[in-house]
Image (cartoon, rainbow, N blue to C red; front, top):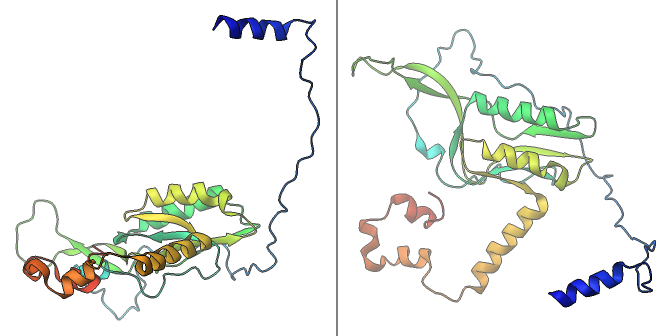
Length: 241
């Protein structure tokens, strides 16, 4: 330790000839990306969704059961990015309320410059009625009145999509903050991330050396698993809850 101090003291003296001098170096940066192929939608801002579905005057608002099948399993339709840029996808099932839509809209409005960026909804307005009985009311007397409306979301469904003349690192923090505040598990993604996830899944299935996968175990009823597993495990092989 004493030797190190002596060497440092020697270099700090004005008589030292080994002092380092700043030198201007040549720095090379990558060229900025080009956004010539970006297609903007007709409306680039997130619109205010309806809190209550708009029915014709002669139609009475209907009530509905829970229908949890709307939350289970994978999304087979709205699971890709239309503009091939960035967005938020759900990784689990959930119900989006009106306040969740407003939270997303306001956060995007505050942190995004709509002069060069657009954002679009990929899920419909709240449409499924959720009924609720009054506090302290007794059981019976039919189904409760409609309390609010929700939008059911499945795993893999794209919730919002963001694009324009912007890079992923500029909107990554915003999309991550939004995904943490949603009522369902979600994650911020780009087209590159989705491609890597699909490639990893395909590579894992091709290079798997273990023959006892969930699909093999359930299809062959190993250890009598059909007696205790869920009917949804027989359909999706323990991949979706």
